[in-house]
Amino acid sequence: MDRPVALVAGASRGLGLLIARKLLDREYAVAICARDRTELDAAVELLAGHGPPAPVTGHACDVASRDEVAELVSRVERELGPIEVLISVAGVIRVGPAESMTLEHFDEAIGTMLRGPVQLAWEVLPGMRQRGRGRIGTIASIGGTLAPPHLLPYATAKFGAVGFSEGLSAELAGSGVTATTVIPGLMRTGSHERAMFTGDHGAEYAWFAPSASLPLLSMNAERAAAKIVDGVLGGRRHVVLTPLAKVGMRVHGLAPSSTVAMLGLVGRLLPAAPDPPRTPTLVGHQAQRVLDSRAVRALTVLGSRAARRNNERSGRSG
Image (cartoon, rainbow, N blue to C red):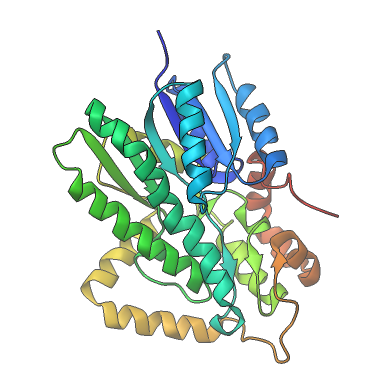
């Protein structure tokens, strides 16, 4: 019996890689895509060696490009068959004060995390509608329901992704095709080592990396991936992960002005933009070397272990 086909966008590392693995466990033929060919090849090798032989293919694609997305979907359906499940995970994390962000940073975030899911969905939807079945999952964020300080391009794109996914769910009612909005809080994927830092690089890394690594603040990524796949395949409208995300959404819904004021106070405690400005961007592992803090290394042990497991270090230099 042929396996149903799933496409996971942004699956060369981190959460996307784990979601692809869970879909393989569910006996899907899985196509993954990412921009970096080297990371993609490493991910395919990891997934192919995960368990019993299973069809997994890797495709280089920038989801911000409409032409590349169209070619990706055409190629996957030609090689594997109709796409029954689409999960958009591709993301860009850029940490720093608003003063250090440029319009190009917003372009990159919106292209990857908003236009990407829209373009992917629009390519797979005609076939899903014709067949009367299909599952579309969009990985948004708690940062798409309340905007955290020092993540403004990220929050801007994720707010758009939430609106798109929720609106799509309503539009698809009764069609047999479902759209699931996934709203996770922080997860221990190891993404802090590949996030990009602007402003005071070391100081920004010092607060973000432990937040994405400590158990009380972040969720085990494998458990998160399992819940996401269950929710998307089950056709749920929303999957909200981590207690902090659930509490944050409820508080913001009840008292939005107070929540924004509180986030403003938090922002004032975070590092200010340096004067004069420093090198525009450092990747996480570079910011870690600039900081050179034994305490922060100790606080990020679990996150660093996750980075090794989840292919987050394949692109490291030095």
